[in-house]
Image (cartoon, rainbow, N blue to C red; front, top):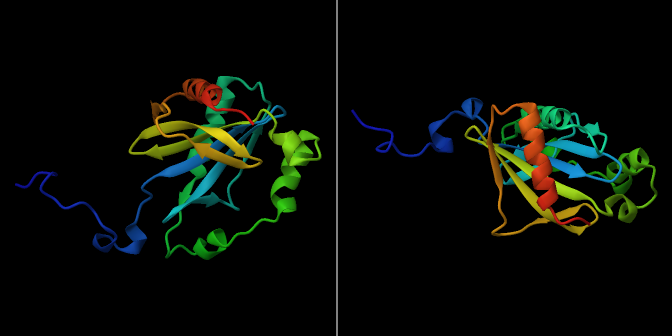
Amino acid sequence: MPTWEDRPPPSRESFPDRCMVPLFKEANVVWFRYYLWVEPLAVLNAGSKRDPDATEHFLPPDADDAALGAAAHDALRQSRWIGLDHPDFWRVIHGKWSEEEFYGPLLDRAGVKTKRTLYKGARHVSMLLRDGLITLSANDYYGPGAWEGIKGRETIEVPEGVGDADLGAAIRKALEMSRPG
């Protein structure tokens, strides 16, 4: 009997489109001085984009670890794989938000008028859920709304089934590793 090592890796041709399962899920956590923003992402064939159908979470900047972890778990649950055959593919891939549509609600929520003020001191963590493991990567500020991962930077990994408080504590640790704006 062949072992799993003898089998070829799965490919798109080996599965009908309706059976394709997401290979991973993604979400972002951004800490502003005014609030925490947890954003689920739509995972596409070649990257991730903002999902117009997902519910974002806004928490107080000093929210406890359990609330932050619960919002992060929910964001990862909402993250969805959108392949070429998905009915929402073209709507998501071509979903363009104007500056006002994207930043307007964020600025209003913070009570500030400029992106520069909003992003002053901001920190960012990207979350990747793959094979039952959540990987948290701290990113450095690159410009208003732009973040950059740094090669060689330590990532934090926790199991998918970790409790909300433990996930929230891990996110806080990753946020502290992020270089602020």
